[in-house]
Image (cartoon, rainbow, N blue to C red):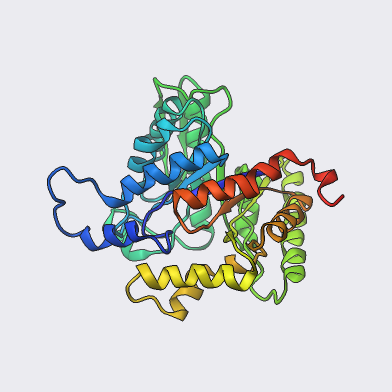
Length: 346
């Protein structure tokens, strides 16, 4: 199994004094010689995660927010990774696919062939309008994204590439810089709808199945995820493809599930102004219901269950400290990578 971590930006980070500081300072100049707190925190956390055995880092994107831009963060930090793959979020409709193809090839070469694209269709009208894009609904949003991916892959794989679609047109496009490896960067995405699942099956390499909304127990959650994976296997098989699967659990270790979760909640209240129960639940659920909070042995057993149904990557939501990354590396990642699944329950 592979393990991922989020780059620590305010949109996705909880319980982080550095993220809180970055938000507080976002609308004013920094003191001379100081860098943005989320960047320095990102360097410390992600280099520790790289040494701890993590395999992937998602550089998420919130254009209309206090977050540093994903491409800037990825370019500044990921070149220092020895093992981690940089997964950069991209919103079709806000980016030109030819430009993203060039950016991706550049980052791939800087990272030694370890970068990928996380396609996000987007839903925030204000954000898209502010940055010159348009949120599309229904069928058109998927058509646009399919064209976006086709153009990137065409440019990565051909000396000259032309494309005439409903949303994008490329006439004899060229990239005079190709990705580092013969295999082009992989495409990750998430979608729940029937049309969205067909889009994943036809065009993406990795899918993040969402947790069942109505699951009242871990067993129900597992059955829901397993059904989603079986459905996607059938869809991708029809197109002669194979999609791989990733989940986004909240992972926290402690003497019990209750004490581990309580420690996380206390940290959120300590470092985030305006935190309340509703806000915490909105940001953490259902990731906290995935069975990955509690004693090490319990978390390992749950991760083995995910592995058994076909999950190959867990993109972990964690309390973002270098010490926690190292602990997870020692207690979770190392055992998961050393013990063969067939011996996990012996």
